[in-house]
Image (cartoon, rainbow, N blue to C red; front, side, top):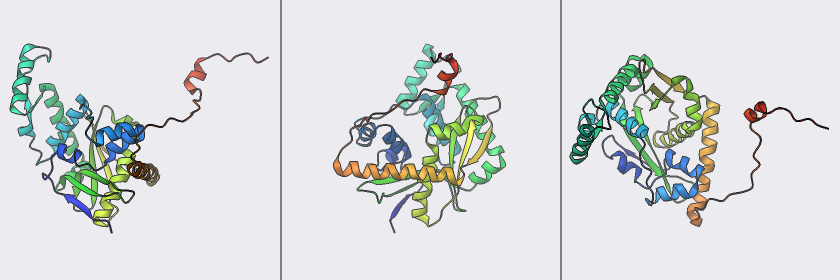
Length: 274
């Protein structure tokens, strides 16, 4: 049985986790888009700049984690326009102090999001008493490279949950597809099965980023969705292993037929056929 290193909460920072050299779901997603891009990130040659959405998501994770040290990592800035001198001066002081400045409106949203999640009885049941930010790292079994995952919420009762922020809960299914969350769920379940011997259920705890409702909901993927995710992950791991052995990270482009999109067909008049 493959040995799995379990990384308890607080043992690694998020930055240390991402710099470990192991492949996680986000890096695998980059690989599926571009092997070269994934290799540049994996070797530290290129580090993607965090977007505002990513930074806001990190703040929400820290707020939801009882050991996340939210108050030590974030500071609420003055309630002024972010283009003003007062805001820029506050940002400079925060950077000097090693903290991230949040807008007053962002802080209000974060508190409303946490309240919404904890008011959801299913989400609250998944979170209460669980550990946060538990890491798992192991050799892949598909080549000379390691893989990893970091569970936002890990319950000793036998389930895994991932916190997601989104603009609209009713569109979350499209986010699962667009951002490859179904691959993430499959990878996490596989690694944690190797660590525990259990196939644990995996849930997404999603919450809207903007008010006035900040709705929250718990989503689970059906068996077919998870199976598709694992097939895509396994195919990627096999290819990562091959490229690791060959040290080949070029993007190979093959001929591809682009079909006419249905929206374009609907928008064009039918040509006469003579």
